[in-house]
Image 1 (spheres, rainbow, N blue to C red):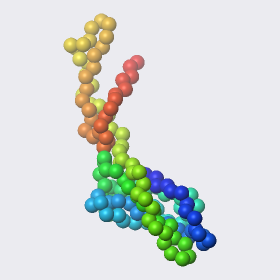
Image 2: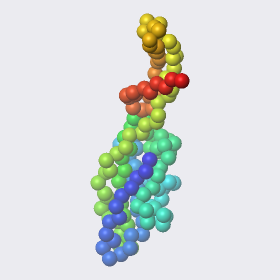
Image 3: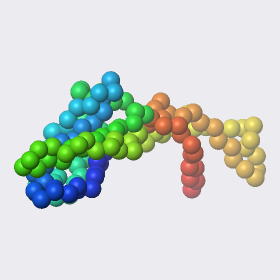
Image 4: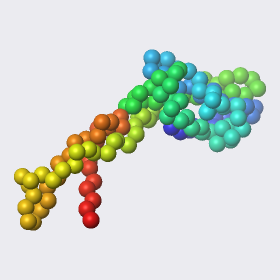
Length: 138
């Protein structure tokens, strides 16, 4: 998941870094410094960082598929910390769903002009409702 923000005014002093906070499953916030170390020049200059899914689903965040990830940022310069940004709009943790299973010819539909199929959804929907299936034939 990528978190990005606009650089604020340093009000006469260069921005030295950012503190990035991510909301945990218990609805409190924790800093994320392994992937979003806001003191690194690449993060300061790009005003963005990326947190892998396995980090978000592990402690201390402990988020699950379907959870919404919220973040907020504080900028700091020589004189101190800015106010905390508003919480971002959030992103839902989802993966692609498992492939459908038990694909079979449905003899109640199949005739000399059409072929009918039936199947079951895979075990995991990836954290969001499956809204469509694509069928390809050869």
